[in-house]
Each structure stands twice: as C-alpha cells, then as structure tokens.
Length: 342
Image (cartoon, rainbow, N blue to C red; front, side):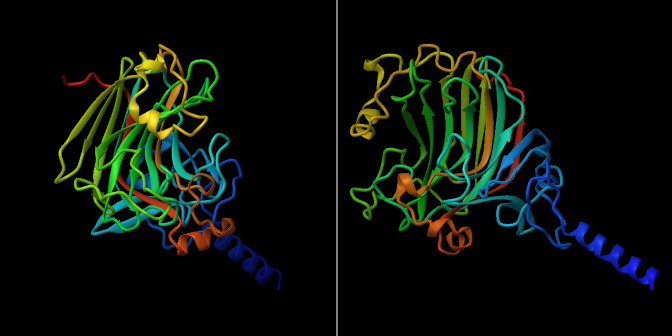
C-alpha cells in the first residue's frame, strides 16, 4: 500500500512539473501543455539579451525556454515560425507609463556615442478597434524603441504602426521625444512618416477618420526596420516588399529643437491646447545619457488618453472584443553599432 501511495505521489509530481512554464525570480506564469514544441527563444535566439514585461504585469529576465499563453508565444503560419507579442488596452503597466506592453527590454545599456543596432522583421496582426479618433495614440502600437534610463527617461525613438478601424491600410511612422531642458513638463514628440501618415493626422471628431493613406501598410503585411546608432547619430532604414525603401538620419547628441524658433509647426498644432509640448530640448540632446532598445508590442490605446473600451480591465473580454494589440516578429537582431555604408 505504501509503495502504491508513493507511486501516485511521484506521478502527480512529474505531471505538475511538466505543466509549469519556466520563469525567473518566482514570478507568476500560466501553465502550459506538453504540446508546446517551440519557445520564442527557439525562433529568435537573441532572447538571452533581453528581459520582458507582459501585459498582465508578469516580469521575466530569463527568456530562454520561456513563453506565456495569450501574451508571448510562437505561432506557425505557412511553415514560418513567428514570435507573438500580445497585450490588452488595459492591464498592468510599467512605473513610467499608462500603456500596457508585452515588450522586450535590452539588458545591455549604452550611451549614444557608443551606440548599438536593432533590427526586426514583423507584421502587425491587430491594433485596438476602439478609441477616440481625435487622440493621436488611438488605434496604434509601438513595435520598437530607444528608451533613456536616466534623466527624464524620455524616448529618442518610438516606431509606430497605426490603423483606423474602417481603413484597410495603416501607417508606419517614427517619433522623436525631446530630452527637455530643465523640467520635463514641456516635452513633445516630433513625428516623421515612413509609409502613410504621421502621428499628427487624426480625425475631425471622435468617430470621423482622416483619409486612408494611399501608400500605407495593411495588417498582416510584412515590413522591416533597422536602427543603427553610430557615434551619436541614429540611422534608420525601413523596407517592405512593394514599398519604397525609406531612410532617415537623426543626431542624438545635437538638438534640432534647442530654441523656441526651432519648434516645428506640427508641434504647435498638435500640442496647441495642452500643457505638455511647449518646451525646448537641451542643446546636447541625449549625449552621454544611458539608453537601451525595446522591441515587441507597446500598446498605445490606454483608456485615459484614447477613451478606448477596456471592459473594466478584464483581459479576456478585451481580447474577445478587439481591445488589444498583437505583433508578430519572424526575425530580429541586437548588437553593436556598425559604420554606415555611406
């Protein structure tokens, strides 16, 4: 009888162990089934260089052999493996943001003069279908970032995808947030279009959308970006089949917005009725300041800014009713900066 009891306990222990996802620092994670054959780290093997925050607040800093259903996992489509980043409009956010994310954060930190390089090939599967069309952040997700880790902790780069609900094509654009001189009350984002509109193009009222961009990117349409920060200069390259390759150059160590006269008309228009947005940048921008890369799905459709539907914070209901962002990556790299070709 004792031998039988011991055997039953042993079997239950083995089954229990198989149904636990690998986590770090005793953080909570959903159970998984034996059917999982691939983890995100099997598809994009740079996961040892990152930590992650999920849309339900789960934090993990050992991503090798880690996944979590409904947030960070692998999907196979037409024999291609993709890493899925999914997050609701309302969940558990980071200390410095009102927006939920299932997003990688680079462990290595660097100053612009030292730099680094990030690439990604992705497609956006879904953005929130609820929100206020006059709010610039509605219906959008950030798929790549550079984030400061000191000072004001602002963001010298955010790469966006945004699509209004009735449109087939969405827009890809990138924002530069100034490293404000003095306090940070007057910070602003200057937006540059890649394909489609920039951040400033919004609806005339909460339910009226602007014209659909003729050269936009549809959901499920692949595109790639390369962010190469070399000796303080940020070199951006965006590519997508059937679209023009677009490149940009931006200094991260010398400001373009150091005086009131430098503030573009876009900023004066977008921030006309807001306290935020009237400042100027320190002349040296982000020079000497610690930064790091981020990549994944940083959902911009929070209730406070965009009046998106969040169903009382119920994540399952948000997923069922379109109040979430979902981004798939099939390739990505992170590493040292390289000298630009031209």
